[in-house]
Structures are given as structure tokens and as C-alpha cells.
Image (cartoon, rainbow, N blue to C red; front, side, top):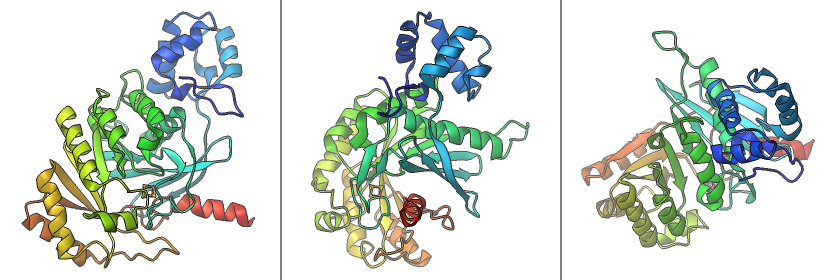
Length: 364
Ligand code: SF4
């Protein structure tokens, strides 16, 4: 698993698992335990440079300086909302950028990561899908987003009563991109996030959100990692779903069987994500159909009031309308939660910060 970009042949260490790092070091005539020392510096000690790795020989440090990098992105823009949600625009050496968001919520700190530059899915209501997909992120670029936000959480998050720094607790693949369309890099990144020698984040605290690729859902169910799966449904009937998600050609029934298989294999309940769009997907008939889906599949439902995107024809429903829809679902026995929108004052709808930066670059 060599994690490289075409214009930079140096190894991106955040994208390597332990075996790959041992192999890379073996090629430099270094023994396997060096890999553990380096991983300890990167993940347990948050080292940003090889210079501080005092238990490595000078020769190896010089070799690593020449042939490898720990991180390769830079934070090109950053904004903090009044609710302390912090959004980073991460830019890679090829000039492409993605958004990464830290969402603090009492002692829970979640990072929302991107898996692709842009998105192939093109949901009609989303800024990220407006320009299609530019490229997949590498495993290293995915891990790097989490690694950086973990440090931010420790530096800026509230310490606990004993004075211990705040800790990143959860990872959600809900940023730009369709994670299951970049399957190999996403699963490689998840293994690093989850590994005790890596970021050591429990699998049950990692969620992959997909618009629905049945084959990949079934494959993910068999990876042996007990992560959570969220299906972006957004409409309980095929025609409306096709209209909102042009990529969503797979029959809903096929998606539900794949999700059911995921539940059977992993024992993890599925979350259905449902963006509430005023006048579009919130009628009582939609609630009734959604409830029927929830009777068929072991799942809970996350309702999210839409964050409007300039130039797109969708409207955010009132809090009362959203609550009424939630009530309709609950009365039909559905475990439905109405999620708070976070960071609304900082281009919080997915893809807006990047879009603004791209437009500014094009204009200037
Ligand atoms: S909502 Fe998600 S899946 Fe849809 S276009 Fe935006 S990033 Fe892609």
C-alpha cells in the first residue's frame, strides 16, 4: 500500500499500516521494531517532524527526511462557528482541497472527514456535488484529516475535571465524496484509525455514510470491523429519490437488502439519514412510507433540517415543521431523532467553504 501522489514520490507515512511501514523500512535495511518506534512518535506523541524522533539513528532520520513525509496537507482556511464547530479547508500538494469539520458536543468530539475531492453523486441540494468528483483521496489524506483534528481537539477542546486534554471521540465519513466509491482507500484509512498502534479510535465510533452501493455495503459487512453504516436515504420512494440523488439509480429495495445483510453480519443497527427539504420530502405520505421502510429494516432515523446553499432551489423547513415530521414517524413506532444543524454561520452546508475558495481562486 504505497500512498503516493504523482508529483511527490515521498512516502506519506499517515497512509501506511504497520506491515507496509515495516516493508518500507526493510527496504532501507532497518529492523521491524523501527516501525513501532516511528508509529509511536506519529500517533502517541503527535510528532510532526523526524528531527524529534530521538531514538532513531541520525542516518535513518536523514533518510526519512529525504524519502518520506509524515503529513502532506496544509490548512488553507479555517473558520469557527458560534457553536464552536470548526471547519478546515485542507489543501494537498496537487492544489486540490477538501473540507474537514470538527464538531464539539459536550464531551463528544466528532470529526467529519471527506473521502474524495468533490463528489460523483451530485445530490441536487448539495454544494459538494455541483462540480462532480475530481479525484479520490488517498488513505493517508483521509487519516491526516483525523490526525490534525485530534491535535486541534487536544489544544482547543475543554480539559476534563482532572485537567486532561479533550480527546477526539468519533469519526464520521460524511464530508465531501461517496466513501464507498473510494472503497480501498477508505477501508485502509479505517484500519489505521482503528488500530491500537494508530489513532486507536473504537470501530463503533466510526461511521461510514453512503448514498448506497449494495455490493460495497456487503463487502464492508465482511471486513471484520464493527463500524456503523449510515444510508443517506432522503426520500422514501424511488422516483423522488432519483430526482434528489441522480446517482441513486439502485432500487431502494436492493439497498435495504444490502443494509439488512450488513446488520446480519455485524449486528450494527443502520442509521437512515434524511435531509428535510421544505415542501419536497416532508408530507405525511413520506412519513408513512419511511415508517414502512423502518418496519422492514433494523434502523433508526436521523432527520436533519436542510442548510440552504446559494443558487440551489431548496428551502430549510421551520423547526415546527421538522418536529411535526418527527412526531409522525414516532407515532408510527420509528426511532427518529432530529439532529441539530451545526456551524450554520460558517458555510456549514457540506462543500460550501471549498466552493467559495475555488470561486475566489478562479476570480482572482
Ligand atoms: S450530499 Fe454527500 S453524497 Fe450528496 S453530493 Fe453532497 S457530498 Fe455527495
